[in-house]
Length: 284
Length: 217
Image (cartoon, rainbow over all chains, first blue to last red):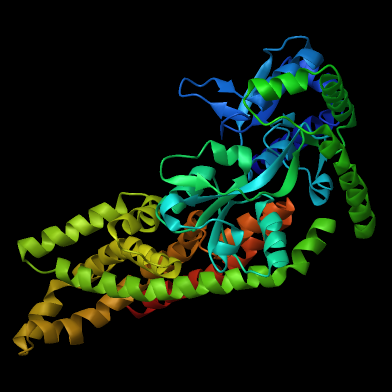
């Protein structure tokens, strides 16, 4: 009898689980409106994009974008719930439905589009190099055979490797979970160079470090939503397009002390979606 | 399917990490045994200073998180002019941490041998060291081996914290690769399986030894 009861309980739980899972499959925008709040994954440690003060308030371009999205979807710019994400957590949190969208310096890449739906870019940034002032390095070529610290799940490694291949030098990479980890490793001279997108590097600049003039592979940032959430993706794309046209996006970029975006460069990234479609077709 | 295919196409990347985990764990285990046996035997002595040092070592390493210990070796020691490579940090960090537990096991295994054994050995003309080596330790090994194998399994699993300092072992490779490819499911399932491949045989060995020792006592 007891066994039967346990079995019945397990079955009920399993069914309840399946049903909630199915309920999530409905229109993404309607689901957010039903919840009354937009759940957004943002960076908490990148000044200018997503940065959390000691008192808990978020600021930055991506925070402003999130408020804008909430205003469009829910009619209330403050109906946003921020969750701090890292390069490593932002993907899985989208998959589990914990977040509606991720606006967290997420670089658009063809093989990423296979896994998530990306909006058109709202910002372009290049990869930069930070070294200790007393190290004497002045350009990438000086770093031949040295170790570069990069963030896990970041596109930095690929960009630098391509540049290194071009210059005929070799680089070693050490990957860390968070930016402060990389900075700590640079300070303790575990690595010779800290490399990530330039705007992010700026927030780790201090008396002992300097950013080299080199720039590599401009990286377009996009807003990511769960794969197949087309209704939400369309709305996000429309909003970005409108903000570009009426100049609000440029104003926000300037208000957050970021370098003005060259929209011609942004539009040159349309090929990424074609590459992604080719990848998916090849995998079939 | 695309995800699984991609994972298997990069299997050598994980094989390297697997071997590194195995290498660090086995070296760490060897040092753990040395530390455990030395400290465990010292704990059976009566010298107050020695006892205090041993107790201090065990208290510190048992009651601080391994990840903090590793972080200190990696980022703080270089500022003091001590620069250890990743493998050394892994082996030393795991051995010092697990050794603190191993010492407890060795100590209690020796204590678990009935005092009559030591008395009988002395009455037959054995000195302290001789009695320890020929009479007490062989019996203690039987008692202490099963819990010691559990510590070995823990050590192997704990080697995964090296991922936070770019250790290059299995967990680091799983984190890095899944981040690069945004493929999490297959990666962590297979990484779990690889840890299981190392740990399960040891656990089974422990169970078998436990059964055997019960039969022989």
